[in-house]
Length: 212
Image 1 (cartoon, rainbow, N blue to C red):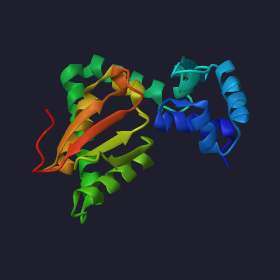
Image 2 (image 1 turned 45 degrees about the horizontal axis):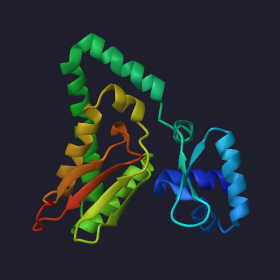
Image 3 (image 1 turned 120 degrees about the horizontal axis):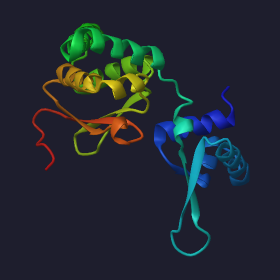
């Protein structure tokens, strides 16, 4: 069973910043016990707190992962991936790197399309796609947005180092999602490489007007 510290880190990774009281409720422990855990994690440099004053009384403490905390969730073969990409760029140029990304997109697209075969409605396809991405380390899930649209969420990017070197991976994945979920529209609304804590995609079913 994961330790309380690991559960806290996972909660902050997948759900974003949270107060001590909220974390205590999620873990089923007292606020004092949760506060002690947060102080230990802060001392280790894995979380950071910010005081929020919301009226009378002492300010609430809100906690979020630091860069070191995010790094506890692995970036698959990060250094090797970066070195290989740089080698491909040097040997074959930008066009060669784009061909490599296009090939990866085609292979992934075939595998994903086969896995989604038989999923007739959008929610079924989202469920299968999120399951596939979760198995690859993206901590993926989806949720209804309440207005007929959906949000596909990836709380972690296991190829983040590679994507920082070559953002063609991000363009490729967006294109792949658009193909797999068509005729629904797919737009990226959060992006880890732009400073967000996660990548998220707004999925709008056919027939629903795009948000202005």
